[in-house]
Image 1 (tube, one colour):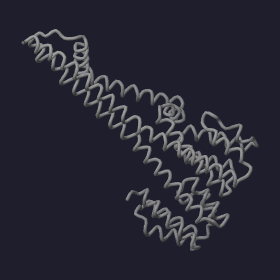
Image 2 (cartoon, helix red, strand yellow; image 1 turned 120 degrees about the vertical axis):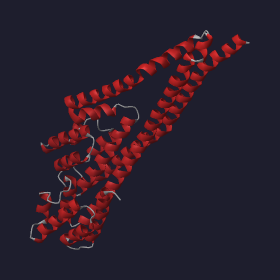
Image 3 (cartoon, helix red, strand yellow; image 1 turned 60 degrees about the vertical axis):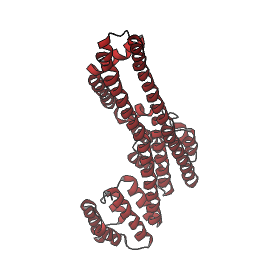
Image 4 (spheres, helix red, strand yellow; image 1 turned 135 degrees about the horizontal axis):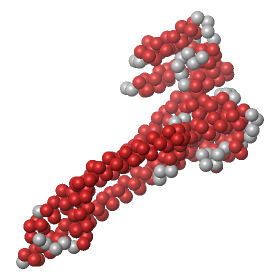
Length: 344
């Protein structure tokens, strides 16, 4: 079991202890004894000691002495304020599970086509260089056979790949790395994310997954009574989409100065479902429900994009490779048939 899974299991036990109305410091010590990570164990013991020394839980969370992310501290503060700490921790654990499952789905959707593409390119390249390329230097060269234009072009390309193929691959990798570094240096992580969003299928999948995470976490914080500007900033610190995080920080400042939320939201980043949810900003319960609905919609769009990647990219790669192999077999078989006819 990974450290992240241990943390999740420990947090589930924490929620149970708090929901059972046991003292928070006793629950923290019990978790410290069971935690497999020395770092987490020390953090939990230190937090329990401060609570036993008389430090109010609100002050402990405000100083982030437990080493938790800001949005988790916000949820725990809301739980302590309303007496529903166990409920909020349970909701947070559900959010973590959903995020982890969504991330695994995206990795699987991107990894399999990528591996298939690399293996297919390597297969076609091997066939082209070592079978088609050697054909000209072997059998056909010995008999001085006149080749069709297609065969001559394929053999010339095979020789080019054999002499310069590694340099081409290295140059393409260096170009991608250079564009990535320049984009990051000029526009930061937000510009880099903006660039990935334009990728076909993968870009929408990543953006909708980030929106689902954004909406569900913001709904948790709003439902816990966290002030909207603070909720936006906490959500911005938690999401992995840098462009979305920057927009959330901008909206936090806008709302903090009394501006309406919905008109200020960027239509380029937030789809209509999220913008519609923003119109309920002055009614916390309705706002949280609308955000949950928008999050479910974005999650469904993300899963649909992941399914399209697997359902469309995989057969496209297979058919393209099959067509390439058939074409390469053609440029090999036609000269061989011509050679047999000449010999007969």
